[in-house]
Structure formats: structure tokens, C-alpha cells
Amino acid sequence: MEFQKPIPLKTQDNSPYWDGADRHELILQKCKSCNEYSHPPGPSCAKCGSTELSWESQGSDINGKVYSYIVSYRPFLPGFQDDLPLIIAIVELNKLPQVKLIGNILQCSPDDIEIGMAVKLVWKEIKEDRSLPQWTQV
Image (cartoon, rainbow, N blue to C red):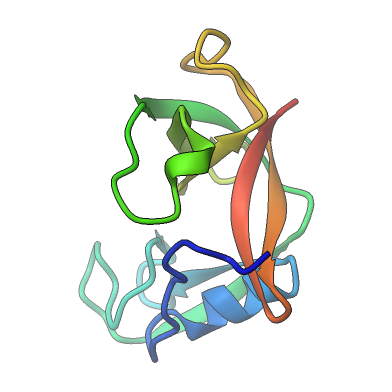
């Protein structure tokens, strides 16, 4: 079955992140001036404004905890109608608590979701050469 949802676009600012995701590897942008991670990635550091940026692999075994979430009971874009209810979460990484990633929590009932819940990053293949980072309960 063809993937029905919008596919995130790779740009000059985020392509290392998405290239890593396609290999099932979390790659984060880091400022060489202040050593802070910038996510989502951009053309300059969100903290100090420096354009001296690098990319660091965090590997593929990523754990975190739910920092915040919402439960959507209606499809907000075409293709999401079969995923309802949809849990959209901000996840704080265990190894880098200053970094927070947004993604869906898969295979979880809205009754079970809670702030602080332990989750693990999984890679959802959406087509042959594209993968999305998502989360599952630990």
C-alpha cells in the first residue's frame, strides 16, 4: 500500500538528520561555538546564532521519556484517518535531556500515555528510501 501521508522534505539545513533517519540512525546538529544541540536543525544555532555547525551520530538505540503530548481524535491532514486516535509526543532524550524530539507514540492507548513514560525510538519505513523516527512504550 502506498504511503498516504505527507513526507518530510529534505532541505540543505536538515538533510543530514533525514539521511540518518533513512539509515535508522539519529543524527543531531551541534553548534561548534557553544556546544549546544539544535533541534530541529537550522541554518544557525538557536542559542548563540553561530553558523559553525556540525552533526553528531547518537546511534540507533535511543531511549527517552514523554515530556508532553496531545491525543488527536481527528485527522488533521490527509492520510491520518486510519491512525486515530493519534498520540503526538514531545520526547526528552535520556542521554541528552536538553534535546526533545516530536513523534508519534505507536501501539499505545490514549488511556496509557502519561508524562514521564519511558519510550524507545523506532524507525517506521514509509517507502523504500525513507524512514520516520517514531516511539513505542518500553
